[in-house]
Image (tube, rainbow over all chains, first blue to last red; front, side, top):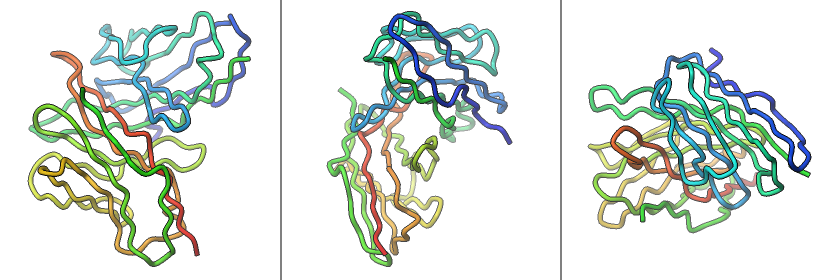
Length: 116
Length: 116
C-alpha cells in the first residue's frame, strides 16, 4: 500500500536554481493537491488538479508550476528558487465524493526544501 | 472569507486526563470538517470527519469531535490522553474553489503535549 509518494524527502537549493518535486499516487484518485507548510502557519494550498489535464491555482501559486499528464502523477516545479520558498511541501490526493460520502484526503510524507 | 481558527498554539495535559483541542470555522453553506494529526517528520494522517448527522463523531485512536453549529465549532476530544498522542493537530474545512474543485483549508495547528 504505497498511497501518496513524494520524492525527494530533503533538498537544498541555491537561489535561482530550479527543481521538480515529484508526487505519485496509486489509488486512482482524481483530486490531487500541493500544499506548503510553514511553522505556525498551517498548510497553504499552492495548486490543485481535479483530473488528468486539469490544474488550477490555489492560495499561494506564485513561483510554482504544475502539470497533470496522468492520473497518478502531479509534479510541482520551482523555476527560480527563492529563500521565501523554504518550506515543507506536501502532496495529497482524494477520490471523487461518492453517493454523498465526502472522502478524506491522503497525504504524502513531505519534502523539506531549503533555499540558500 | 472562509477560514479555520485554532485558538491555542499548544495544549498541555497529563496522561490519563481528558483533552480538548479547539477549532472554530467560518464557511458559507454546510461545513465539511476534518481533523488531521501530524507526527514529527511525517505527513498528515486523517483522524475523523463531520459531514452530516450526529454531532458527536468518533474517529481513530479513541479520538472524537463535537460539532456545534450555533457556536461554529468542531472541538477534538479524548477521554484519557496518552503520551503517544503528543503531536501536531490540524483542523480543516472543505471549501469550494470553483465549479469543479474543492480543497481543504487548514487552521494553524495545535501542538498537543501529554506528560507522563
